[in-house]
Length: 473
Image (tube, rainbow, N blue to C red; front, side, top):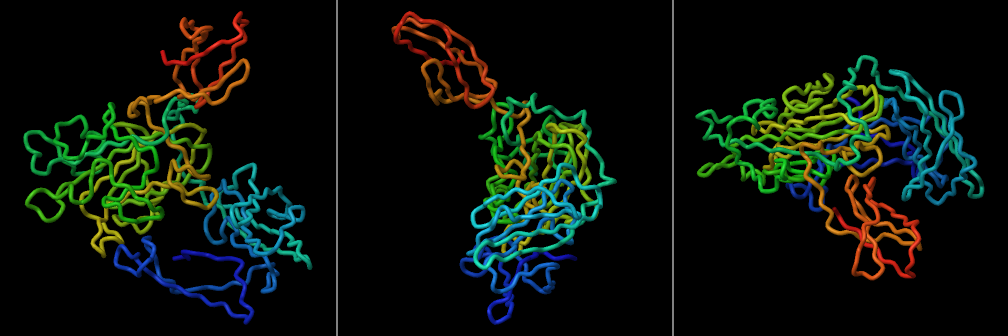
């Protein structure tokens, strides 16, 4: 089955012993130990210890290698950087003495000082070939007296992507076309009245019904007071929903599904259990670079992912080797190639038919959850549209986005002949001038390209004092 965690650079204590302690809890909120974290966990059962090849670390050393990436034994993203994480402890790393060798050749590295860890990073110019095997050797020196050489050797294998399908490049928008789009997702939620599906009213029976039900007769019981003028909820963050906002999956801070205020909203009057199905249609444009991509969907009970929008969207099949079923103990994986960089349209359908399984159900929680992430080349799994390195940017399609309104115009900076002010990309602004604050004359019209715009006045004026104002047309 493989391991669920891996540690490197383990050194014994002064007595020569290594002690492993392991425990399992479901979190205090779910009936576990007081103060325990709410994420799901697994008790350790089997451990394998292996001497790191070429390593001369010993108990007397000040520094430790805490991460060797790509990981040995796990298929590597072909766009992966090679990363060695070093805990400096009380040591001092000599930047001039860092050497990394990839397949026998020395490669360039950069140092990233992140909190208490130093990352030694090599970013290859090209992707690793499909299924290729590579060996990495790292050497660095702790300059504390006496100076100590650290070194380690490991190998990794790139994922086999030779038979993966490619997205249709004709579906993509260029980044230039999307300069006025807002970040995020457009979401529509449908909760048909289960007792009013006669007389032509539609209900939800299959996930794909969410592609067409919007234009059919229906009675929607979802709370729709937060819809924008286009009929969509605007999700400006990531997709990390749980029906009752309970912790599940890889990321915390779960949000309720838009328009669904918990399980109680699905329980009809005079009923004790939920009876109303609901579903969400989520539309977005993902900014994808050329090459290999690996998306992860932790979802229960049912979902489908499409390339494109509307009834003509193309269904994307998940990786056949990973099948979580209706549970959420691991993510579905969507792996594909992107032929050229651009913004690609995606539709994600989520359908809660009140089935499914979850680690939450054992403590009375609901199995209804949805989390959309990306397996990044850095070995992390951030939410899509999260403001972190390794994530993928998401943009709301124009047909689902509400119009941005600028609440105020504020001065950012000023010189003798120019000034800058905050703007909304794509918006137009009028620059007016006056010598007495009574009579104003239009000087220029500007179209903002970003969140700040600078105006420079090269005209000659007869007044020693001149005033400017900025307004929307």
